[in-house]
Length: 94
Image 1 (cartoon, rainbow, N blue to C red):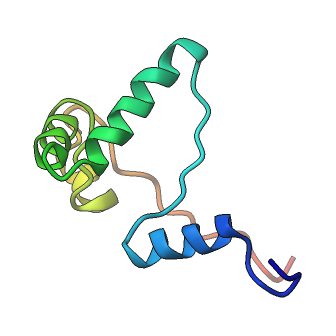
Image 2 (spheres, rainbow, N blue to C red; image 1 turned 180 degrees about the vertical axis):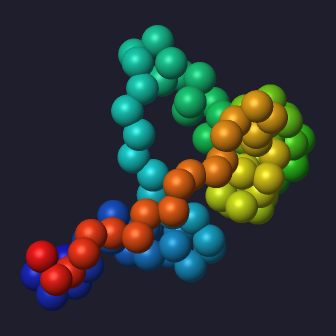
């Protein structure tokens, strides 16, 4: 390998990127590391990826539809006074 050639790790990462993979670095507790590795393995396995994704979305992922507008529309606003006195500011001549 000459100094101008990319390292094998760099070539491998580029190949994985072309395949649609991204690197993700996370920090978890020591006892959770095997579980996170198993989840990543299941998501990468063509035979288990669909079921694993469905289970994770059902049990863990939160619905993020609509954004702030939908959140405010769904908020219970009964009993909350939304009126406020009109403020005309101060007299600029002073």
